[in-house]
Amino acid sequence: MNRTLHAAPKPPVRIVHLGLGAFHRSHQAWFTSQAGDAAEWGIAAFTGRRPDAALALAEQDGLFTLVERADSGDSFAVVGSIAEAVDGADVPRLAELVAAPATAMVTLTVTEAAYRLGADGQLDVNASDVAADLELLKSGTGNPSTPLGRLVFALAARRAAGTGPMAVVCCDNLANNGTVAHNAVTGLAAAWDADLAAWIEANVSFVSTSVDRITPRTTEADIAAVEAACGYHDNSPVVAEPFTNWVLSGDFPAGRPRWEDAGAVFVDHIEPFENRKLWLLNGAHSLLAYAGQLRGHTTVAEALADAECRKAVESFWDEAESNLSGAAAAGADLQIPAYRDALLARFSNARIAHHLAQIAMDGSTKLRMRAVPVLLAERAQGRSGAAAALMIAAWMDFTAAAEAFHDPLAAEVSAANTLEGAERVGALLALIDPALAADEAVVEFVAGLLGTFTAGS
Image 1 (tube, rainbow, N blue to C red):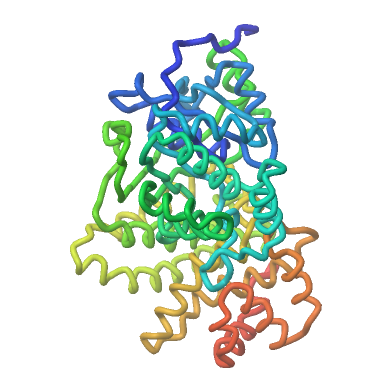
Image 2: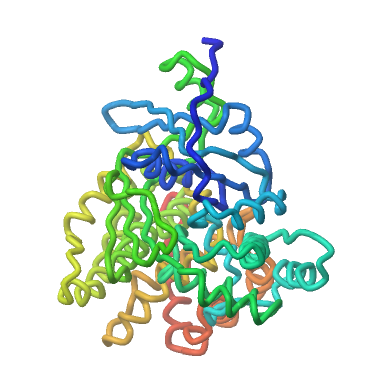
């Protein structure tokens, strides 16, 4: 029981990843390890805010155990695609790797909030961390601290090295995420160096993806379970559901792994698949996160077992499905009824402790993609959009009731919560969609839904 994961031959680094965390390891790293040409594709994965994950993985040569947790039991597999785990603060190493001729792409799981988009969908160059990074880039006196700043700095190194085109592959839960990444990266580059922005436009492709695999945080019990079942100690196992899905659209000018060997799908038009996932899976998750916690639940499975939460989810799915029908008519085989049935089964897997508090983070950013499009589409069709509006109202109630919450606009949310009535609702709506906030009928409608979910009701 005292054995550790053994060193194994490492594939050469050809992918640089920003956002080393559990989801990256259960998804992109797993897909890469399952590719038929996996021996040719190693990943150098950089952490975000803290070095902990890189330090832990480095102790075991980047190896980790993936635990697939089904209702029927667990299965275990060692994943070896991470060739190097690096503290995200090591920007010189990031620049060196991105500039290397062998590197074909940068993949991103940096969370929705890291793109620093305002409610208008554009990069907020006045955000304090973006402005600080921009000052560092212009002065050349230090290393950027945000994922965007670090990536732009590294792309400048690739340009200087003359090592040619590459892809940036966004794996965050954003609609048109390749376009979002493009706008954020080129926006920051243009604010620093117009020539660099032009080079990025000409040499960097931005690939859009839809990613899907429920991956809760690893617990001490999970670490102990791996040791008991496998006979070695792994300080960084990842637990995930058996289901996984990856849809990609875009160009890879320097090549890519054969991810299709593991089930990845490449399409010309990704938006219908993005919206199916963002609205049906992620939207339901956000609704359960806020409504479920207000009703005293802690996990997705617990909240879904609550009849009131289940009813709200089904109603939201009905609204979302009615606005995905156009994609089906255009030829996208979305199989929505089967997708909904699969989600119910996945959400009900009580052995996956997917905590609502984790899902509830960054609500002001997430609701822009998960609730607002459905609400706008419903109202454009002359319907109320009640279920989407209820998700927004539940978020408002949650931010007022929670002892603490994590959000890039936490200060603005807290300030809005000092107001009362329609003024408060309008101020909170303005943080996620100014047009909705300007519509008095919407403000009144959302205000009327406040208090729908209360513990014990």
